[in-house]
Length: 201
Picture 1 (tube, rainbow, N blue to C red):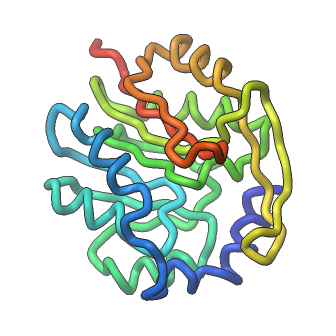
Picture 2 (cartoon, rainbow, N blue to C red; picture 1 turned 45 degrees about the vertical axis):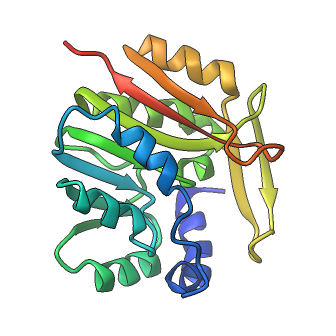
């Protein structure tokens, strides 16, 4: 499934993230942990920002200037209503050219929808886009080996992929980044997340 197809799926279900029933605490403690590694508030990017705006609210509250990118037009329509002063981009992040560096990047429950063959190039691009000592947090499938699957848990079928835990560690090292934290935060489910920091120059 290509990112553009994933965007069309999320167009159908975007309202769920804008609902009062959505758990707006989801991922917040993990982001608080990641932000503790940040040296100072600067510019942040929310990859697959969606409609809820909860991470944008958190980052704005910490003094960051925030940008968001998503492949779902409807997600961004809702996001713009919530945060009219934030810059949002309707883009396939795999193809999108990042023209600046960021002090903090979050990709929560988003890049695991990227095709397996594009996972490593995308993560290299995001790490390259970090400023010196910049921090990246992203969630992934905590599989031992690379894997991909399709799931219709949310209604429409959605694609997921994972490089496998050791492959992620190897990628970080090859790109001059340090893993600051890894956790299976919903164990025994395989939902997991990394906090990665770019080495100082």
